Image (cartoon, rainbow, N blue to C red; front, side):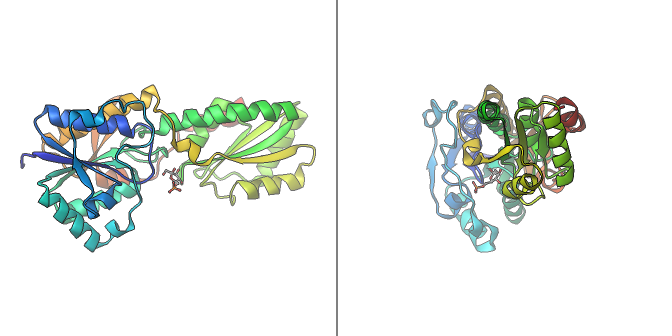
Length: 328
Ligand code: F6P
């Protein structure tokens, strides 16, 4: 086990509320333990372009409440190539960096694992930061709670106008291949139906369900469509339903990137702080190629390989079952 002395920290992939509290915890935990810290701008792009700066405790003042990431982020294709990784390694070595904290989702971890296998002398620790909540080894990822609350706030507002006009709304939410945001927001807002990538919904069943609701004196209906749903996207779903239901005025809303912004919730501020603190302590303890995650309210380590290989994230069975029961 080699003793580390200088940590680089970066955020990569889609930003997520809670990344800033996590960066703050990484920087301050490292400095507290006598380590130096380098901030990398724009994720792996900053490693390749040598865009890094020394961080002090004041570099992370007053950022707990900020959405986005003060380090900025990017999706960086050149880091997938050997040449990109070699350049990144050279820049880190020139600065004397011997450990790296990467905050991001599955794309970020895939890059981190490849880099760490190629250059094992730089220890790597992952922090699950994505609104999608789709990584194994952490019940919740950073940003998921805030994003879900943002979605709930938006859908509550849509419900007001849907109800005023007796309309049927189809609302698309983010999550890539994960229906985690859709499911939680749908239950929280009393959606009449939730279309998820993890559970195929036949359009005929959806139509039957909506017709039943109408005959059950529902004045408005909300259908949440996760962006990864396999029915062809929110507009196709709305069009297919429109053909069969003509006593409802149908509208479509895509919530889009507003779901990624905003001040982190209390949950994400605490989670970010816990994960950042744990990531640095794990590196000090000699760990590498791992991810820190929340499991049964404890912070535990999972290998990056397991976090990625067991990618199939299971949605809670009781939540899936109750969608139909609670929306009658
Ligand atoms: O991974 C986070 C996420 O917001 C996904 O939910 C979404 O599919 C994707 O990123 C959008 O990426 P971009 O901001 O690059 O368009």
